[in-house]
Image (cartoon, rainbow, N blue to C red; front, side, top):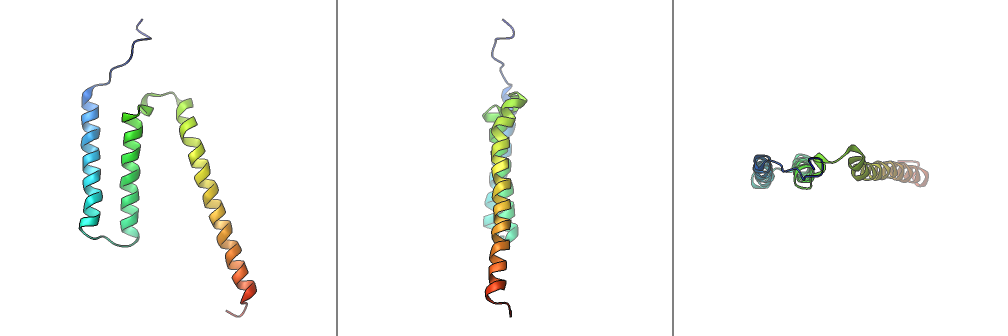
Length: 107
């Protein structure tokens, strides 16, 4: 019976994660409030967004307590898709630049 009983997680971990989410949301808001511009702005926004998504996934969706096989099932395909998209973007840039060189070789 001990193996089949559902595990109760301490409420303290949820409160800590809520606090961290609040802090990350505040930092994300401060990026806009202080009018950070350019690449730094988008880097900070993406980093805060990914951190918040990771916390929500791992704790509130209980992925942190799942087996490794389920974690791999959830995370390997999106990572593979991102890698393939990056490779296609690199190839597209290469093709585009070669076409420009072929059309206007003098520049």
